[in-house]
Image 1 (cartoon, one colour):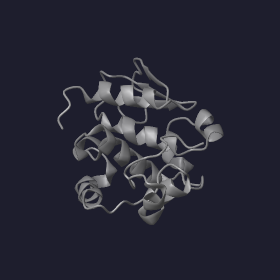
Image 2 (cartoon, rainbow, N blue to C red; image 1 turned 180 degrees about the vertical axis):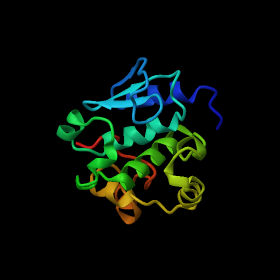
Image 3 (cartoon, helix red, strand yellow; image 1 turned 135 degrees about the horizontal axis):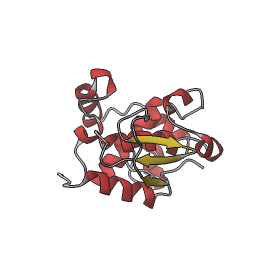
Image 4 (cartoon, helix red, strand yellow; image 1 turned 60 degrees about the horizontal axis):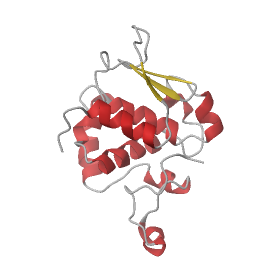
Length: 166
Protein backbone atom coordinates (compact mmCIF):
# COMPACT_ATOMS: atom_id res chain seq x y z
CA UNK A 1 0.00 0.00 0.00
CA UNK A 2 1.20 3.51 -0.74
CA UNK A 3 0.57 5.89 2.12
CA UNK A 4 0.65 9.56 1.07
CA UNK A 5 1.62 10.54 4.64
CA UNK A 6 3.41 7.61 6.28
CA UNK A 7 4.78 9.80 9.08
CA UNK A 8 1.30 10.66 10.34
CA UNK A 9 0.20 7.02 10.07
CA UNK A 10 3.24 5.81 11.99
CA UNK A 11 2.88 8.43 14.72
CA UNK A 12 -0.82 7.63 15.14
CA UNK A 13 -0.04 3.91 15.41
CA UNK A 14 2.76 4.41 17.92
CA UNK A 15 0.64 6.68 20.09
CA UNK A 16 -2.23 4.21 19.83
CA UNK A 17 -0.14 1.36 21.27
CA UNK A 18 1.08 3.50 24.16
CA UNK A 19 4.38 4.97 23.03
CA UNK A 20 4.77 8.71 23.47
CA UNK A 21 5.67 10.60 20.30
CA UNK A 22 6.23 14.34 20.41
CA UNK A 23 6.56 16.40 17.26
CA UNK A 24 8.99 19.25 17.70
CA UNK A 25 11.95 20.93 16.02
CA UNK A 26 15.16 19.11 16.96
CA UNK A 27 17.88 21.24 15.44
CA UNK A 28 20.99 19.43 14.34
CA UNK A 29 21.78 17.27 17.34
CA UNK A 30 19.88 14.05 16.68
CA UNK A 31 21.41 10.60 16.21
CA UNK A 32 19.14 10.04 13.19
CA UNK A 33 17.89 12.86 10.96
CA UNK A 34 14.77 14.28 12.60
CA UNK A 35 14.56 11.72 15.38
CA UNK A 36 15.58 11.45 19.03
CA UNK A 37 14.65 9.28 21.96
CA UNK A 38 14.49 10.86 25.39
CA UNK A 39 13.46 8.98 28.53
CA UNK A 40 11.51 6.39 26.57
CA UNK A 41 9.71 8.89 24.36
CA UNK A 42 10.19 9.53 20.66
CA UNK A 43 10.85 13.09 19.53
CA UNK A 44 10.23 13.64 15.84
CA UNK A 45 10.95 16.66 13.69
CA UNK A 46 8.72 16.11 10.68
CA UNK A 47 10.67 18.66 8.60
CA UNK A 48 14.01 16.95 9.26
CA UNK A 49 12.87 13.30 9.30
CA UNK A 50 14.58 11.84 6.24
CA UNK A 51 13.29 8.28 6.64
CA UNK A 52 9.85 7.89 8.30
CA UNK A 53 10.52 4.17 8.77
CA UNK A 54 13.20 5.07 11.32
CA UNK A 55 10.30 5.89 13.65
CA UNK A 56 9.24 2.24 13.52
CA UNK A 57 12.70 0.87 14.11
CA UNK A 58 13.44 3.12 17.08
CA UNK A 59 9.96 2.44 18.46
CA UNK A 60 10.82 -1.25 18.15
CA UNK A 61 13.83 -0.72 20.37
CA UNK A 62 11.62 0.92 22.99
CA UNK A 63 8.79 -1.60 22.68
CA UNK A 64 10.96 -4.66 23.33
CA UNK A 65 12.50 -3.20 26.48
CA UNK A 66 11.08 -4.00 29.91
CA UNK A 67 9.08 -0.97 31.10
CA UNK A 68 11.66 0.17 33.66
CA UNK A 69 14.40 0.26 30.99
CA UNK A 70 12.04 1.81 28.42
CA UNK A 71 11.31 4.81 30.67
CA UNK A 72 15.01 5.59 31.14
CA UNK A 73 16.30 4.98 27.61
CA UNK A 74 17.56 7.75 25.37
CA UNK A 75 18.97 8.02 21.85
CA UNK A 76 21.30 5.29 20.51
CA UNK A 77 19.13 2.36 21.59
CA UNK A 78 21.14 -0.29 19.78
CA UNK A 79 23.48 -0.02 22.76
CA UNK A 80 20.84 -1.89 24.79
CA UNK A 81 21.66 -5.21 23.10
CA UNK A 82 22.75 -6.59 26.48
CA UNK A 83 19.12 -6.56 27.68
CA UNK A 84 17.74 -10.07 27.18
CA UNK A 85 15.28 -10.32 24.29
CA UNK A 86 15.69 -6.63 23.45
CA UNK A 87 18.45 -6.56 20.87
CA UNK A 88 18.72 -5.27 17.34
CA UNK A 89 17.12 -8.43 15.90
CA UNK A 90 14.05 -8.13 18.13
CA UNK A 91 13.66 -4.40 17.40
CA UNK A 92 13.86 -5.10 13.66
CA UNK A 93 11.37 -7.97 13.88
CA UNK A 94 9.02 -5.75 15.90
CA UNK A 95 9.28 -3.00 13.28
CA UNK A 96 8.54 -5.52 10.50
CA UNK A 97 5.44 -6.74 12.36
CA UNK A 98 4.24 -3.14 12.72
CA UNK A 99 4.87 -2.49 9.03
CA UNK A 100 2.86 -5.58 8.06
CA UNK A 101 0.09 -4.63 10.52
CA UNK A 102 -0.15 -1.19 8.92
CA UNK A 103 0.00 -2.57 5.37
CA UNK A 104 2.98 -0.43 4.39
CA UNK A 105 5.72 -1.10 1.85
CA UNK A 106 8.88 -2.90 3.04
CA UNK A 107 11.16 -0.18 1.69
CA UNK A 108 9.61 2.30 4.11
CA UNK A 109 11.31 0.41 6.93
CA UNK A 110 14.29 -1.06 5.09
CA UNK A 111 15.26 2.10 3.23
CA UNK A 112 18.44 2.78 1.27
CA UNK A 113 19.78 5.11 3.95
CA UNK A 114 20.06 2.49 6.67
CA UNK A 115 20.86 -1.07 7.62
CA UNK A 116 24.50 -0.82 6.49
CA UNK A 117 23.65 -1.44 2.83
CA UNK A 118 21.63 -4.57 3.62
CA UNK A 119 18.14 -3.18 3.07
CA UNK A 120 17.42 -5.21 -0.08
CA UNK A 121 18.58 -8.40 1.63
CA UNK A 122 16.42 -7.69 4.68
CA UNK A 123 13.40 -7.08 2.46
CA UNK A 124 14.05 -10.39 0.69
CA UNK A 125 14.57 -12.24 3.98
CA UNK A 126 11.47 -10.96 5.75
CA UNK A 127 9.33 -11.15 2.59
CA UNK A 128 10.32 -14.82 2.23
CA UNK A 129 8.99 -15.55 5.71
CA UNK A 130 12.36 -15.80 7.42
CA UNK A 131 12.08 -13.65 10.53
CA UNK A 132 15.28 -12.98 12.47
CA UNK A 133 14.34 -11.82 15.95
CA UNK A 134 10.82 -13.25 16.08
CA UNK A 135 11.85 -15.99 18.52
CA UNK A 136 12.99 -13.29 20.96
CA UNK A 137 9.67 -11.49 20.54
CA UNK A 138 7.87 -14.75 21.33
CA UNK A 139 10.05 -15.36 24.39
CA UNK A 140 9.21 -11.82 25.56
CA UNK A 141 5.48 -12.57 25.28
CA UNK A 142 4.79 -10.27 22.34
CA UNK A 143 3.88 -12.84 19.69
CA UNK A 144 3.47 -16.55 19.14
CA UNK A 145 5.04 -18.74 16.50
CA UNK A 146 4.42 -22.16 14.97
CA UNK A 147 2.49 -24.67 17.02
CA UNK A 148 2.24 -22.27 19.99
CA UNK A 149 0.19 -19.90 17.84
CA UNK A 150 -1.88 -22.77 16.51
CA UNK A 151 -2.66 -24.11 19.99
CA UNK A 152 -3.59 -20.60 21.20
CA UNK A 153 -5.78 -20.07 18.14
CA UNK A 154 -4.04 -16.88 17.04
CA UNK A 155 -2.17 -16.06 13.86
CA UNK A 156 1.61 -16.54 14.16
CA UNK A 157 4.21 -13.78 13.87
CA UNK A 158 4.15 -11.24 12.24
CA UNK A 159 0.84 -10.98 14.08
CA UNK A 160 1.50 -9.51 17.52
CA UNK A 161 -0.52 -10.38 20.61
CA UNK A 162 0.96 -7.41 22.47
CA UNK A 163 2.93 -4.44 21.17
CA UNK A 164 4.78 -3.43 24.34
CA UNK A 165 6.81 -5.68 26.58
CA UNK A 166 5.48 -5.86 30.11
